[in-house]
Image 1 (cartoon, rainbow, N blue to C red):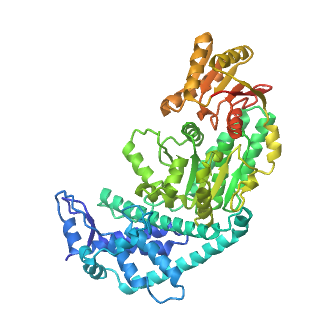
Image 2 (tube, helix red, strand yellow):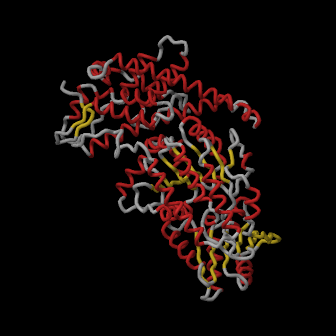
Image 3 (spheres, helix red, strand yellow):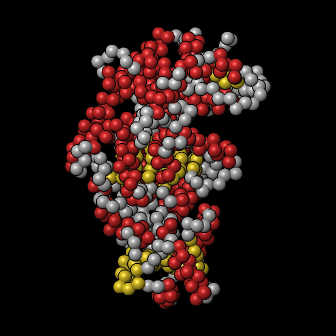
Length: 616
């Protein structure tokens, strides 16, 4: 057998040796996991992951020029070798060592698939059944013997012992961390959650290891297949951004220039002075240690740019930070905020800022697809769904992204919208990311369901604003008026709003059902004359249509014309529009407060009014 290959481009002379690929994958995997203190484990998994390619059957397969549907299993051999030779070694920390061997064997076994279950709901053991695959079928003995013709067995044994030691150290640190949380768990009546929390975080750690291995393997393969003539170093730019400090400094300069322009252009009213103060506090909070923080600034206080200011200052302070994520629950807010942030930072393309959410349409979709597979940009604007998928979804692509959530700052806007069913898993995940993965999380909301220090978090999160009470009182620019004495049907609601609009310049009507909202919109269009600009918004509209409507509405609100918008709840959180009055169909308190945030947002009027009524 000639030189062992990992990849070959068919009908060409271009090939990549197995040794090159294993070492590149190992080096990348090590780099991805350095801050998490899993680098030795990552390097080991990279060296072993393609052991099964070191057999004549696979090498012959690579040399075929014709296309074939033939599949040759090469993923199992490395896992079986590790399990066979190191699972039952005599050791004083046998349990920890067995956890380590199972974890690394599992990620090697699964590096071309989703993670196999240790146990499934049918009481089967998929992981062990894969390990028990007949070795003759895999040409296992040949693979092992040939593999050690290019890698020294003693060197590999040294790697394994170093990786076991690293795993043991981290396991004990994780156990100590969980014990520190015990008082908080007991205070909330969760005594039995102690052990569960440890196992859950160990599960996240295994998923993180697979994420790093999968991305390292796929990325090195991509580099060879697309640039076969280049001699590249995977740890050097442009393949790996070693230090992003220059990017953070450049973006901060652009943000500060924009904020200075706003200060010079705006009247120095009390509300604008308070916005500047909130922004300054967020900037100063960037000096804090890494952890989980809340930003409970009131609606209309400029949380979007203030939170970004915190993130950029924090990234400069903690120089290992490679990513800033701005995560938003609603697509209507996401598209608007993405456009605003691009304008503020002067970044129109996908060199520094990447947008990734379901409704996004990109001209160069192939390139965008490559970017979203990796999440390797400095700034990523994405949705809750995408981040939760990266943390918990079983698909290969979602798992591949997870390791990019390390060495990161994650800003979660409108955190009150997180479904209650996701809360415990979410909190455990961000605790793991901040405690063990060098990340910082900022949870933003003007309508948190509890005071900032009582979010039922484990442990309680720290609020970064020191004068919340003053800010909340100062931003009170809306009076609530109760109209829930009776149910308003469509014709009654339209009549009351039409009468009220004789005294008003603009109104926003938010209803709970799309059909009811459209009926009200249609009746208002029929009843009122052409001097009114009347808009309708619902989630059934495509993203571009909604974006165009919001832009048109923003322009109309600045002119001397009467504006009415009838909408479902999509408009009530984060959309930067200001109406003189808001009519909100009765719903949860947090939604009512969010809706009121679209009323008299910049104190254009002496007083704004939010009416609460019974409707659909």
